[in-house]
Structures are given as structure tokens and as C-alpha cells.
Image (cartoon, rainbow over all chains, first blue to last red):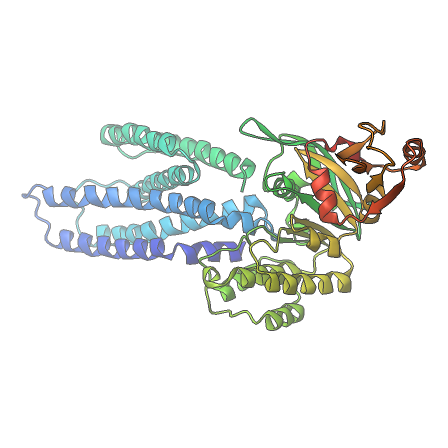
Length: 210
Length: 300
């Protein structure tokens, strides 16, 4: 399993570097913003920074899943690997673990930095215990859901269905977050979506021609 | 434990409504070198891909080393060496990296033997796989397949695209390796001389069916090509069954007959031919006869 994960990381190292760089840039920007924080000025710049950042994350992670599957399909990597002492389920599991690692590289430093910054500086909004963890969990699940959509899109010859799925998911989650905020309800929906998505990917990958 | 290392039971495969394999039954006993022949698109690669679990069958079951192909475990895969058609290697990898990956993912790896093969083939480890010639890729694929000391070797047209010298070199090495180890081998090719050199049992696929499945010697015994000269013009019909091919020119008749026996000989003698001589047939001649549109006479 370690050899498979190592191979995935080496083949998609650009996403890991991208995640680390993005995380570092985001932390630096956050420090800079908090340093110059003025409650009288509306947070236009923060929102202006946040929207493209989220877009990059969503597309980046989705692209990683899609690239992993697409390159596998076109380069017939699994066709070779599955003739060695490796089962298909292990290949896919290693791929998913790699995806999770990339998401963690992206989010864990930001979560830690946010926790520290919120302790040092006065938060601009009222906080409740475990808020950083809750937000981070939802963001992680959203990123993982995007990754799962990418996995499906990369393997399907017609990526329209997964793309429509992503659009549908976005249409549901953004109003949910705006209206009800981060919470258990959104975690449940995301977990259900991820489970369904992974089962579908698993079934397709296990039964398809390599 | 079953003596058949490879078992195919009533295998049917459709591709987009087109029947590629139509009820194939095949058994390869332990220690046998089985040559699977067929024209391009006859389904040789499909059978191999189904056997290895790379392709799902439409109907029927296939077994490798006593396990159903759809449920081959990693441990069983480690006992099977596979040289794919077109040498299915990860093209973007450097040779060294590919070797390391295969080694890391194998349960057993004979370093000494592998290094010996790499030295024999003089393969560069610092070049990318896509930069290697087809011959070098074939050699790399063979070395990787042999390094795991496989019990069963599956060669799917390994010499495809090689020039004559490279093909001969590849085959000689393969024969050496096969003879040293005494393994079960499924050798798939449409280069008949290659198969004739190493196979001891032959299967011929035509029109989705396995029209021949017997030892090579038996096949040579069963199909006869005869040149018959009659005192006057040759009769239009000899009333022989299982005639695969028949050509008449004046007094001369050339026929290819399956399952030649005493009874057929007696029938022929009633026509009082002046002479009857057997034309020696190579495997290639037999293959051409067997893959003609009327191959049912040679079924086992």
C-alpha cells in the first residue's frame, strides 16, 4: 500500500506543492488582513480574497481527482498495476488516501494558523467553542466531496453527469451555509454525498475494463 | 488441486453487440506451453484480458491457478507473469523507477535473475520507457515478468512490432527461460513460426470459436493435404466428409481433409487414383485452412 501511495504522490506532486503554496499564501494573507483589521471598514477585501480562494480550492481539488483517474485511464496504469500483486481495490484506496493527504496539506496548516490567530487577536465575529474545528470539518468534507466528483469525472468518458452533480451540490450548499451556517446538518449531507459518490466510483472502477 | 492451470468455461464476450467470443471452452494443464492462434481481432487478447480479470466476461467463467479470474487475489497475481500486447508499461516513467515500482509491488522478486536479464538485454535504467525502442520495451516487459519467478506465464503477442532479429533474439531468450524453469505458458501470437517453435499444444480461434484445441503433433496428424492424380479427369466429388479445401485442375485434385483415417483412405481408393501423395503442411498452412469460413470440421 505504501508503494502505491508513494507512486500517486510522486505522479501528482504538483498538487501537493500547489496545496502547500496555497496554504502558505493564505496564512500570510490572513495574518496581513488581521493585522490591518479595522472594524469600521467593510470586509470587501476579505470577501474579494475569499471567493477566488474557495474557487481555486474547489477546482484544484476536483482537478486532482480527475487527473488521477484520467491519467490512469489513458496511460493504462491500473492495467499494469493490477497484473502485479495488487488488487484494484488497493489501487483505488491508495488514490483516495493520496487525495485526502493533499486536502489535509491544504487545510491543516490553515486550521492551525486560524486557531492561533483567533487566540492572539480579537475575533471580528462572535465565536463559540469548537467553531474553528466545525468550520474546518465542513471545509474538509466539501473539499473531499469535490475530490470525489473529480474522481468520477476523470474516469467517465462522459464527464457531464459528475459536473452536473457538482453544480447541484454547489446550489444546495451555498444557500445552506449562508442561511444556517456551518453545522451538523451540512456535515450529514456532505457525508451522505461522499459515501454515495465513493460507492459509485468504487463500483465503476472495480467492474470496468482496464 | 486442479491439474489445469487455466480453465475457460463457456466463455462469451460481446463488444457493443458484436460477438467476439462465442462459447469458448479451454483447459491448459500444468507444465504445458499452449499456443493460442488466431487472426487479428479473433479474440486472443480478449481471452487473456478476461483471464487476468482486466475485462469482465459477458457470460461464462474463467479460472487461473484454481481461482476465478474475477476474484484473483494479489497473492495469485504474484504467481502470474504477463507480457502484454504492445508492452503495456507506464510510458512516462524512467526504466529504473518502473523497475522499482514493480519490485515494491511484488511479493517475490528474484534480484539476481532480474539483474542478469537486464545485463543480457543491456537496458538503460535512466531513460524513459517511451524513449526505448519496441524491442527494448519487449525485453523490459519480459524481464519484469520473469523477475517474479512466475508459475504461469502469459505472453500476448510479445513479438508484435519487433524486427526479425529482435524477434528471434526475444524468442531464443524466452525459450531458454521456459526450458530452464518448466512453467505453464499461454503464448498468443499470429506469427505462427514463433508458436510452432515453442508450443506443445495449439488452439486456433476463428469467428469467435475455438476451432482447434489439440497437441501440435496431433494437429499435424489430423489435417492432411493430398495431391491425387486420376487416370482421366478428376471426379467432381469424392464423397468424403470433412473436406476443408478442394481444388481440381484436369486430372489433378488437391484436397485438404480433417481427421484423415482408414475409412476415408478406402473411399478414396474406390476412385482408383493413379497416385496419391501427401503434401507436407506447416502450421501456417494449417492455420490458413482452419481460419477459412468452414472450420467446423477440425473441432476437437
